[in-house]
Length: 448
Ligand SMILES: [Fe+2]
Image (cartoon, rainbow, N blue to C red; front, side):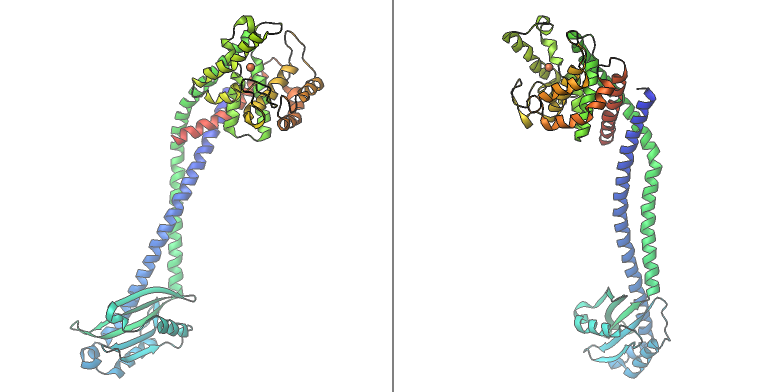
């Protein structure tokens, strides 16, 4: 496969992995910040409205200071008149207004009060006051103010000890201040806008940082890619070295790997198992390196002693791949590629699901290639002969369910690759390798 195509697969793998992580991180940070910003903003709205209510009530206190300074709260009727002016709009708060106020002396006798009859929810206010408190609470608490919702309105419920000009306690005032809907919705919109701005800044920052991070990752991935390239070459060289001992060519490894990957894809195997399968397909017979030529190259049937020695190639293979961390997962295929579904294989006579799925897949791919290829001692079988022989092993040599899936894709595989000795299997497998090993490298680079 041309280098630019591999580079493009590599870049898109890194791009995908980075964008996914950056996007997830940005969304997570944005959501957290939105929650924090909204909490702070709503606390600010509460503080602002409580201050508005306090300012209004202080204005009122100053307007009745003469009465507060007089014994027994002076002229109660004057306090009531002043309060009524408040209710009839002489005092016009722009952001809200009191709809219920009570003034009491130090013995909690009510001396003046007002209820705004024009306020639609005045009955709800009365119910709330009646249920929730007694003026005597102020003796213990000194003051209160709390924001609460009554129907669609947001109100401040407040009360505190009234003091005269000498700062001496002379009575109590409590009231309910209704925040104007216009003020509240403006403040609410402003809070939402601020939260969205913060989230937007986070996303914008991620976008600005993306090219820099991407550039760095590509450099790191480039180095990892060189390592991967070297590993893949070792895989290929090892596989070829052993193939050349008993064959003119190593092309069998490439075809078998392609057949196995296509079958694994059809079965929906996860990518890590497909990577193991590719490694295993190349190295399945690597242990033959430890078998004597007189046995490995013998054309006639092997004696039982010779067969025993030949079977040892599985153990040799396991020893070889276990020595490399990168090759270790090839053991699934290397260790079990001679096991048979009915338990008559070797070395452990495993059967059924005890044989790793990768090895069950490989067995079908390996025999399919052997039957459909020309060898020095036999001709290549045509498609019908190949499939007939393969089906003879259904449930014996091969996993029947996996074989049934293979039957669906076998015609195209036979047509495209069977008995083919040119560069196509090599080039196609390079492309497959780039697809399965590069995303792994990209993930690896991002996780370190
Ligand atoms: Fe083998």
